[in-house]
Length: 346
Image (cartoon, rainbow, N blue to C red; front, side):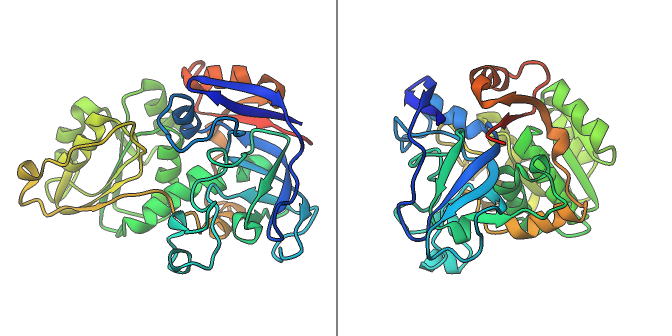
């Protein structure tokens, strides 16, 4: 089969590899029908994920059809259309039982697919702990509608959940990339009083204005003043930082009111400084860490009900054979790209 592979720092390549086989009684083999490219894939390419293993097939955003299951898999069967969770988790350890599936203690626990074990920018993929990692797609939901459930939608849903948003809140979302938009959609489900998106890209700001007209949009240079004029208590009640830059981390806590919650969704390339003397007295609550992607079944129900729609994010479509071109477009943000769909095996 064809598989897009991490060769070395700065280099991916489409290679011929053997089709994966079951390695455990809890595994499933999934035929990938549709995948996507994530910014985290670029982090691997550029050396920002030290645990990534050279030779691994990359990719962790995908949907597909179950081809084969181990004897201990009970929740899915061959022929089922499924979403694939970005995280591998056993469902049985201390952390999994408390919903902290990103911290699963299994050897393949956490973000493994496309990083430490072969992922889904390929024709087939092996999914460990398939009962936890796969969710059946309702018949009325298309592959494109379900494509982002297991990663960026799970991230947005998790971020909105742990931020404990209330109906009277002013919520600031910093960053309107794909994960930022998914976070926005999940924040909207909680019906806060006011949502403000801060985005420096004119194209992405325009996308938010066109698709979500009730959301206020500002740019980083005006963000602090904009928040002061559009909040009730001297800043945002909740800030979700989804951009992942040095200046956006600083902007997040500066735009928060005293006793606000700042949820860090972004993955940073380098350590960030928490200047406690400068924020003394703000009494901020910081929530950080990787997504706990255990809400995928609920997200699929919301999609089925028409309450979440991420299909406008798919701006480009390519077959797996043209994945190099897809990466070039996505990495360099060409042609108004937001997300790319990679067609796998039909």
